[in-house]
Image (cartoon, rainbow, N blue to C red; front, side, top):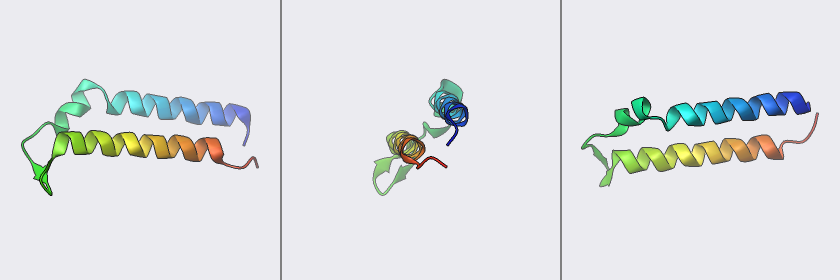
Length: 65
């Protein structure tokens, strides 16, 4: 993969993570709803965190074209 393209994708992933973990969007998950007995807020935070880590690993481990 082109180095500038990789840099752009990493920057876009950073921007998405910054937006997802910023106050206005985090407030959407703050409710009393429970899913399988787990409160929605921590479940959403850990799920988003895991997805971002998986995307980062996928970007970094791709074979060059």
